[in-house]
Structure formats: structure tokens, C-alpha cells
Image 1 (cartoon, rainbow, N blue to C red):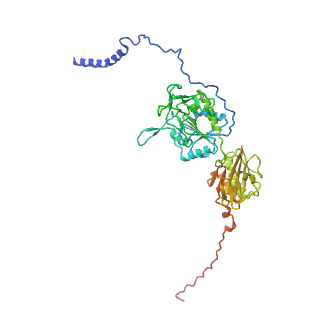
Image 2: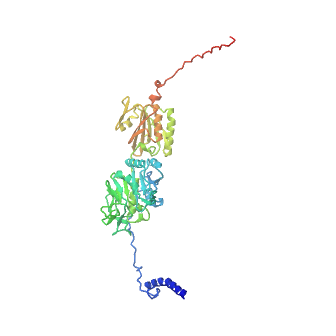
Image 3: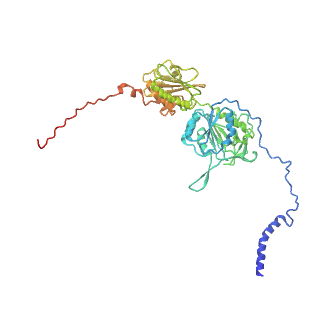
Length: 485
């Protein structure tokens, strides 16, 4: 009897809990009983559509920037897939530009010599001090810098001290490059609870500064964006009063796109609007086209540091004045020819300079009628016997120093190589062919180079010494006395 009671109690404990839940949910009626539950009005329901373009996106102009190269950063664990950038790359190609990816730091130094713009998307590794210096020099020479962050691209690193994973925002690595230009991207995100594109973080911008980049724009939508602080320069777009920053939950003249005061550096808190399908929303495609044009329209200033990318098309090499082509010059000229050939620039030797053609002209400090027109344009005076007078440099002693003078007119470049003597020209040609110009001081389009094999030390007979040695007579050995003697 006792066992039956225990079994009954156990059964009740198992059955009663689900039975009580059932009664609480459905009462004593069947769950299959017909109930009057209102269904959604599917026939009349319309999902809100994203904003459409305010007009037909302006067609890109016919390709007119052939040969312009845009570098895309791939050396800093960048958080993007190449396929995502297809709309941006296509827009650059439509303008005649070409995109190249930078795989590492060493390649960056070389590739910046011929690039028009450098673009970095959401890096997760810092730029070295040398990279930052090269990029600042690149901007100073007319190159353009486009830096894009994105709060939805988060990289996590492992903290070996705490054992925790920590987020490493991309703004940490972009801001050192933006600081010299008076801009910064904040580690926040913009949001709008009143008017947005389907989500509070999808912010609509309808206020634009007067700038070619924002011409004819009525609305753009950024799908998750950092705010950009512009101390020097222009805020290209401005959010409305209902758009707030996640850092302060307040807003006042917030922006997500800034341009530096010199018009060469662009900072963006988002790049989703450059990718599909978001590039098709509102006027995003028009802004995308404007940024592509901004990149390819950069005009680099001539600089000797960019050798061998100084010439467009074939180059003639001539020897000016009374200077003759010496056998000792042939090997250095051959090396120079190989360097130029590697970048598809043929080098041909001509007896006299040709008008309206790229030219490398060799000469010495002896004034001649051939060199006079070039020297006057650079402000170089060779009249003094011991020194050269250079506008902007002052005076430079002739002995042990050579000059590189670059002049660019339209599509034509002239490079003048001046050495103290004909014997010094081979060394100067080798300095140029090396491409490093490590022993030269370069100021814009003038370079002053040290020659370590100057003629006064290696080619003058009075510095040669001969030594004569008198032969000493061989001593005759004395006979050794013996016991018998």
C-alpha cells in the first residue's frame, strides 16, 4: 500500500506542472478551437523603400586621365574584400585611371613615385613613421590622400596580460595621418532615431558644403559612420539636429566627410556608400563618382625624387657644348638605359637636342651656348672660376659637386646633368641610375650631389706619386773557420 502511494505521488509530480501550464495558457478549452485573432493586412502593407536617386547620376566624363595610378592600401590588415570595392574601381577605370594594390611597406616607397592618389580603407595595423613621412611628402608634391574608416569593421586583438580580447578601432591608425592636416575621425557612430533609412544607424545627410565633391547632391546615406572632426578645412556634409554621436548622445553640426584646407586630403567616417548595394541608394553613386574623379585629378609636382618616373614616352640623350661622348660614359649610360627601359621608357642617343621631346642633357661647368638657355631658366651661373651660383641655394663649390636640374613643360621633361669635368660625368650618371639620390640634396627640381671620385683627386697627374727603391747588394758570406785551419 505504501509503494502505491509513493508511485501515485511521483506521477502527480510529473503530470501536474505541464498540466498547470496548459490550463494557464488555454484554460479548459482546446488550443485548436477557433479564435478571433486579427491577421496582418498583407494586401495593404507596404515596406518602406530606401531613398532613390534624386536624378539620373551624372555620367562620368570621357576617359582623360590615362596613365593615372590610384594606390589602394593592402598592407595594414585592411578590413575589406577587394570585390566590395568594385563600384569604386570601376568609376576610376571609367576615367582612364588604373588601380594598384600596395602589398607592403617596401612597395609603398617605390609606388608613391608614380601614383596620383593613395587610398586606405579601415586599416587594423599602424603605419610606421617612415610610411607617414613618405605619405606627407606625397601630399606635399600634389598627391591626394583618401582615408576611410567604418565603425562596423571591428578588429579584435588578444591581450596577453589580461587574457581578454580587445577591440582595435581603425581610427587609431588613420588619425596620425590626418593630424597634420587638421582633421580626426572619432571612435563613435552617428545615429538618428527620428529620420533614418530603416535603422537608427543609417544616417541621411541633406546639407552639403559648396564644393565640387558635393555638387548636385540632394541626399546621401551612410550605413554606419564615425563622425569626423575638422579643425582646418571643410566639412563637406552636415547632419541634422536629430543626428547624435554615440560618445555624447548629443549632436551639433556633426559631419562624416571632411576635406583638408589644401584640398588634398579627404577623411570619411564610412565607406559602405562605395559598395553594393548601398552605392545605389539616394545620390550615393554620384558622390562615389565625384570621389573617383577627385583621386585621378591630382597633379603631381615635378620632383627628382620620383626618378625614373619623370618622363612620358621616349627620351633622347645628348651631350652639350664642347663635351664629347667618352668611352667611360658608355657603361653608366647602358645602366641608365636599362633602368628607364624597365618602366617602358626608351632611351636613345642623339647628336643634338630635339625640340618638343623628352631630353637628358649631359654637360660640364664650362659655359656653352647649348647650355645657356637651360641654365638661365634655373638661375644657375657658371661664370665664377671656383663656385656655381644657384638661385635658391646660394653658391656651391665646383670641385666635388654636381647638379641635376629638372624642367617639365606640359608632357615634356628635360633633365640636365652638370659635372665639374667630363671625367666626372660617368659617376653622376650612375648616381641618377641608382634612383636613390642618397648623396644629393634635392630641393624641388634642383639636386646638388656629392662626387666622391672628383677629378682633382683621381684624374690629375700631380696627385700621382711614384716610389723608387734602390737595390741593395747581396752580402757575401764570410768563410767559416775549421779546426784543421
